[in-house]
Length: 139
Image (tube, rainbow, N blue to C red; front, side, top):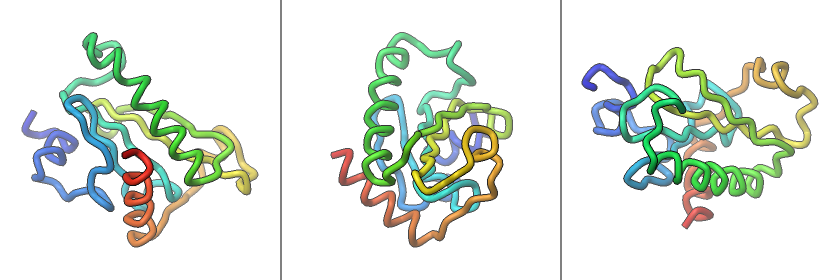
């Protein structure tokens, strides 16, 4: 779809995420979120195929999504010492299937909606370094 931001990002038409793509296979692309939208270690799992939500998964996406999400969640816990990895998919602003994986570290007091409402960000440098660490861990 030519007007889709995520499709265009996958084609290299839009700017690459901080640190580039961390993991890619034929179905999924994983990257660090933009630095102004969440804490360090906020990761996107993006579908390579253009569709909107879980209801539109094909059988291969159904089989592989849990494996990819589990592997990335475990790696995020290891790298961030997070108590929880929040998985969030709203697909409101960008209508292309993607899930936010947001680590809530042990030192963060807020939980649930209070945590998600925080105005967190990180530096470009830190996001690139984190992406490289996660890439190495997922190999």
